[in-house]
Length: 67
Image 1 (cartoon, rainbow, N blue to C red):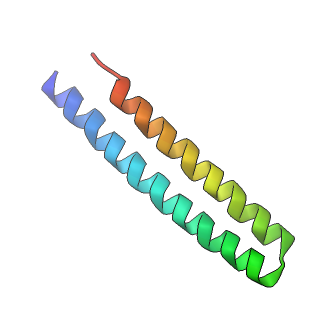
Image 2: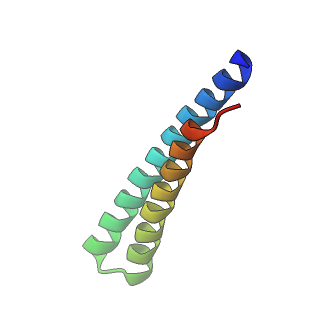
């Protein structure tokens, strides 16, 4: 059981890191789109931010899993 707990903690940390990086990249894309007044780039940045938030929320669910 300790192995499963360790694996879940590792997955949670990896998902948090990935979601955070994805959100930061979305913010950069959004800022570039706002600067250039580019609608598609702005939309892409917003969706990347939302995707990063969903990934982080999924990582939070890993913490609630128990065996």
